[in-house]
Image 1 (cartoon, rainbow, N blue to C red):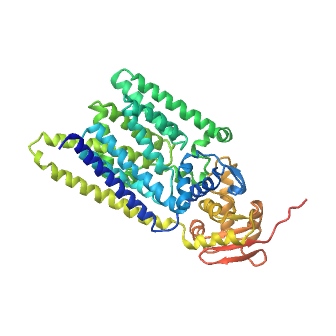
Image 2: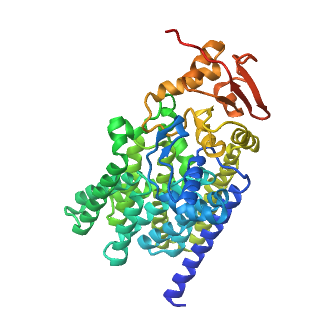
Image 3: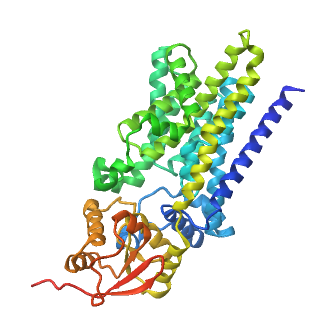
Length: 502
C-alpha cells in the first residue's frame, strides 16, 4: 500500500471519528428540547440576524434598555442555519458539529509533529471527548465551539507558515477569530511566550514568525479597541473581568487545583501533556512543540492571575494538552521500540486507550448527560410564553441574574438584569437589590425596590427558590400582588407603589 493511500486511510478514519463525536454530541443535546439559560443570548442574537440581518446592539429589553457590546461573527455564522431549520434545531446541531472539528484539527497537529498517524488518530479521538470542553458546550450554543477549534487550527497554520497556503490561511483566520471573540488575546499571549522560548533556546528569531506575531498582535488590539472602546473608557481595567459583580466574581474566576484540572482535562492527557512540557522545556528542542507549550503556559498563567474565566481556561488547556499528550505518547512508543519489550507495544497501546476511555470519555459523556438537567424545563418555557402572550409590551419582569437572557429571548419582555454587565453602573448594587427582594420579609422594603426597577411582574421559579433558599416570597399579600400564574413557576403582578415625600 502506498504512503498516500495510508494517509487517506487514517484521514478517513479521523473523519469517521469526527462524525461519530458529532452524532454523540447532537444526540445528547437533543435529549431535551431546550438549552441552558446562558444559551438564550446566542438564541436571541441568531434569531435577530436571521430575521433582520442585524444583531441586537441597542437592546430595549436587557437591563430595561441598554447598549450591548460583542463580536457578531459567530451569530452571523449560525443565522443562515437558523433561517433554514429554525433557531432551536440550528443551535442544537451546528455548534456541536463545530466543536467536533477539534478532532480533525488535533489529528493534523499531532500528525505534523510526530509523523505517527495512529498516535495522531488517537489524539484526535481524545480531543473529541475533553471533559471540560465536551460538557460545557453540549447544550449552551457557546461561541467556544467555534473559537477553540479555530484557534488550534491557526496554531497549526503557524507551524506550517513556510507554505504559502497555510500562511494565507493564518492571516485570514486570524481576522475571523478577532471578529469572533476577545479570546483572540489568548493566542497573542501564547505567541509572545513562544517568541521568548525560542529566543532563549535558539538565540535568534525567525523573521517570518516575528512578522506574523506582530501582525496578529496589532490586529487583535486594533479590532478590540474598535469594538470595546466604549467599555474600556467606561470600566477601565475592570473590563478584563467583564464588570461582573463581586458577589459572583469568585465563582467565575476560580483557582485551579490538581483535582479540578484532572476533572476538566482528564488524568492521562494532563499528566502526559505536562510530561511533554517538561521533556521539551529541559531536554529536547522542537519549535512546533514549543508553540503548544507556550499556549499551555499562557493559559496556566492567565488562570493563575485570574485573567481568564475558570471554565474557559480549562477548555483551552485541554485542547492544548491533548496534542502534547500525543507528542508524549509518540515518545513512549519510540522508546519501547528500542527496548526488548518492543513487541508488547500493542498491549501498551490497548491499555492506554482503555484507560483513556474509562477516565475521560465515559466521565465526559456521563457529565454531559447530567448537565442536561440544567436545561430550561418545559414548565419554565410555558411560564415565559404566558408572559409573552398575556402581559403588555414593555413590561419589566424580575428574575434571577441567570434567567435574564431567557426572559428577553422567550418572553420578549424587559429584564432587571442578566449576565452581561458591560456598560452597567453599580452591578453589585443591582445584584444585592435582586437578592433583597426575593429574601424580603417586609412588604415595604420589597415594594420600594420593585418600584426602583419599575418591575411589573415577579418571576418566581425553582431556580430562584434554590438560589435564594426560600420556598415562598414572604412579603406577598393580595393587596399589592396578584398571582397571575401558578404552576411550576409562580408569577405575581405588582400593583402597589410607594409615593416619595416632596
